[in-house]
Length: 487
Image (cartoon, rainbow, N blue to C red; front, top):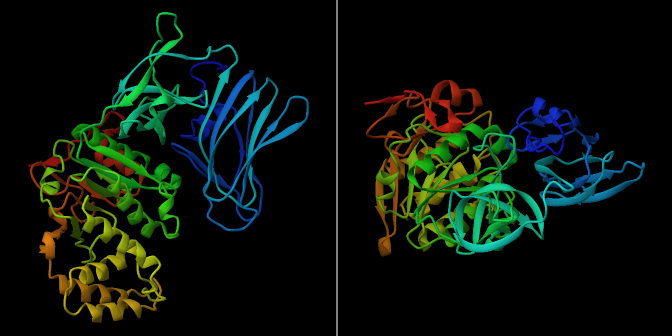
């Protein structure tokens, strides 16, 4: 397969054979394969990957440094080794940064991505061979819609083919990129672009080289959006689980939001990913219409019933909805529903602030999962919350001894008193469900079973990729479920 072949896909990192088949050589002790590549060498050893170039053209790389360490050595370097023996540094990428890099290459060159104390994430690599395609001219411009395939350009450089997945506003949309030569359902990267950066990905106009541009975007009209907050490592590990959620969103015309650590700079003050998540959800809500509802799910959640939607829960109309887990008798933090109201947004920010307010004890507090308990009883104004707060601040044991943590949880759960709707001044409402009555339930608790008429339509805690296939889907790429639904 030549590098100018339409099937050549140097950015396909689903497996070692895919990467080495494209010509990559890799030297790392830790590699995570999937929609993106995540790799590093332990300690201060040098980790690197190299791709020889066999054709002249323009090379595009979308590379990130996923390591959060403050050390100055925490950098990813992209270097072009030229056929004449010289080399050029194309880019240095610091902690938690992402860069798109373009380089003119010739036959005999090679590109190298290396790190000393960083984590390399490669989202895409694309080679446009010289003479392979003339510069695109945009003819007429139309209003583009969700689901249409587009060619995306940045500063005149073509950067990939994708599908419009979510409309942010009339001039901005989120594109899910797809790679040539792979299954069209394989999305590997999501990014928002303006209408002027996109043209419809068709066969060209009358002269074979004119495409229809996007003048604006038509919204989905959906008032519900699924939200997944996951960095590259979890998007790789839970790729099939996320694919099942995409099937669910597509089936019911819901938006699907894929947020990562750097999605909202206003949340950069939060270093703990779990607290930062709620800040980002609050900011996402602030950008949506007043009647919009987000359904937040962990990346290890699988959609198990595609026929039933979320109307039973969204229609409850409360500002916030949580559920009580049966196994641990605590409120779950990872999966919840929030309506776009001032109270919901403020509640989520208050939850995130538990990372910063110094109220957590020095021991194990289960991050945002512990914080949600004290935040709920205080926000609801429940008598006795001060005693629970004292227990929370006094937590000192580590994760090997959870007795005092669950003593604190029991204090708050006794005050909450089980599933119910709480109504506050001004009509603000919080609803707490029993696990088997919420839209999602722990897979182990519900025995991997699904009801056709009631109860969860998603299962939480499905950690293994193989379980998605063995238990739930015969073909997740085409949204084909196994016969799990019970009457």
